[in-house]
Image (cartoon, rainbow, N blue to C red; front, side, top):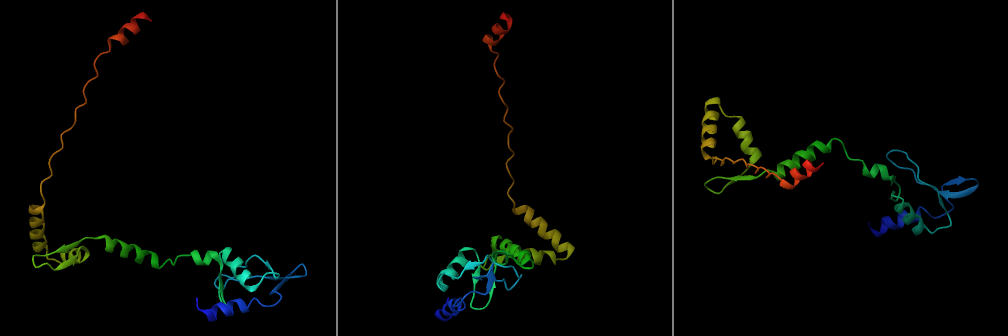
Length: 158
């Protein structure tokens, strides 16, 4: 923060508080977005100490507006889908053509979606021919456990 805003922030805590509780002056903040009230603090502290105490409680103290801890943590619901899409786009690989030009995988998908049905069939044939065949996995056969002669003798003794 700049020095001017810090001075203005501390200057607003000069005096004997903004509320009276049980006849004693106290300082209390009110959130500018939701109207929540902070814990009331003593006026015996210096303005610097009051700002520090409110910040320790999670409040964002400004020169004229204050924001409660809950409002600072709220995510904007309209931004969440856009952020998810952006993250997915960033994680998608880039595709290079023979000339070395890079194209994002999403752009390639969008171009493929606009193809005519006959062109799409040709593209699918080409892509299938470039996919290497996967080797078949052999199933591991578990060896049978050998008969335990000691177990048989133990059973017969019982």
